[in-house]
Length: 124
Length: 141
Image (cartoon, rainbow over all chains, first blue to last red; front, side):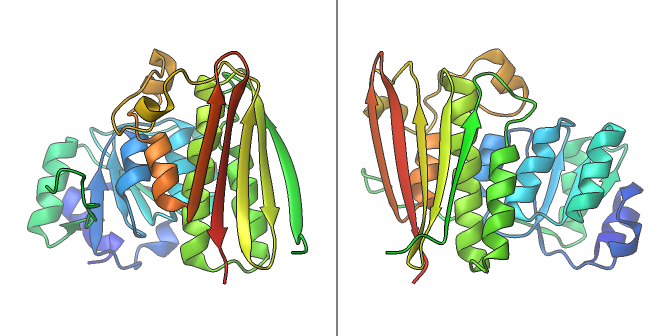
């Protein structure tokens, strides 16, 4: 699907990147824990989060993420939105909770980021 | 091995506002040098993790970037306090991060293991009262 399709599915509002809504997306992840995002996200993907601090942007920059979705109607500060614009990141906000946003996107065909599990010492 | 680039970035303890600035600059410089995207991504993640560790856990230190035609190297050297049990610190989920770090979305105990996972070689040396040095290498050829 495209980011424009996500906007439709989530009844979302576009905060930045109106001109990049035709970007195609295949996977997403949802987390407020940037440590986990940095550890497990292996591809250019969509991040659904409730965390509005600048570190979300920095994490997105390091991982070349395509789109940030703020759940529960959150809107980050202007400084953060300007940074997103500089990074070429699309930012949208939806009134849905993170859980519902994930459910709606999954039902519409978006899938989770594949995770590679290293072989653990106990063989699991 | 001739150096293409050598940069040093001082990183202050507790400076959460600027945490990530050195890594953003490192990413920009490596991109300009034409480092392949897959390597760039691994360097960026490891660099951000190690920079955050300096801010969250150390008494301040320096992040050094060295680029040769063969490899990208990141060296983080801090002024303390040192890690009492490095083996424990390397375990996923183990964290001594404070509330500030956690409120920003960090401190999940993934930093050191994530650096090791992303780097082609990883070495950590720590002494309590002296400091910690982490060296990571990323092959370019």
